[in-house]
Image 1 (cartoon, helix red, strand yellow):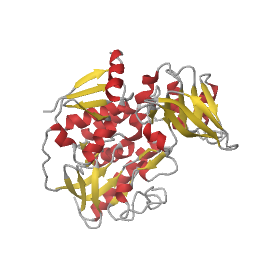
Image 2: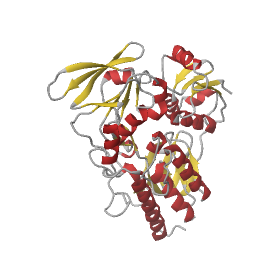
Image 3: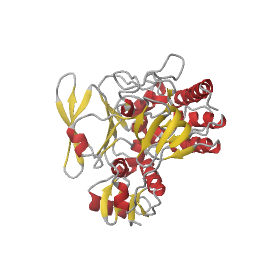
Image 4: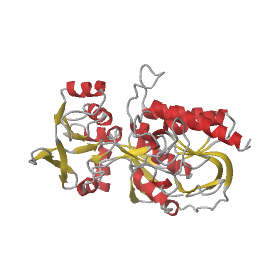
Length: 400
């Protein structure tokens, strides 16, 4: 078994995802909590030239964070690093396969499980969806005091498993919807499914400037809950104007000094009224309107941003040590291109008032098909719709 060392901290969704992936592969590791041992943060930075967690070493070699080991897994290279052999498996026949998790996928699994369809869920390496990166959920019915996103998704998963859902923390790598049963593959398994529910959600967008990628994990992040505490006492900037950006900025005020700067392309926020008011009233948040990040600048780590005023073209510099990008999301539907109909952005098209896609027996729910609302509660609702639609469709086909 490989010798694994992981630098982490207690509140870190990406750390949890890395641990789930390694556990699924039968691995153990030595964990170094950089919050419990602050001196270890400097050690981590010195060894990796990165300031974000997790940072993982396998047999003494630095392999990176969760995104890095997930990429190795998708490429079929992680098992070799871990000294494990990948075994080819014969395709397993199932009644209902759910691709993706989050509130849509888990709700579909709960309903399908209660209907005794014995669902199998390919939850993905990014299991739990965007709520795994959300600090506080205050608008989901039934939680008057609020709940963290990871806590909510853990509860959803347990409820789905209670009704017989088998959850696999793997990515679907190939689908074939041209014939039935539908074939879906992961790196380590293959399934033949009578019906499929797609609940692959959406992922964070990036600004698209080269320096953004250059300083990834070295001051640039898309997850304040993961990395905010690493910049305690430092000046921090957030890009965006929606609810996610306001939530990130408000969360970061507990760490930033002297301020959190919010950089937004327009002169008014797109965020909901309550989130906008909270941010605008917070004395530690300062807004830079009608502007965009032109370049991220630094040496080993971010030291400043070059800001461009979109009305005047004027350039200025903002000294910060961290930049959190919160400019929206892209539906995670590339896997289905050429098979399922989608709009120009990539959202899956469904028949009005249903979850039916253009392929009979394939249903879609959640943020993968919802360009309008994109809320946890609406995602859960469409997950319910998809399970009921799938159950009825199976009955019509005579599949018991």
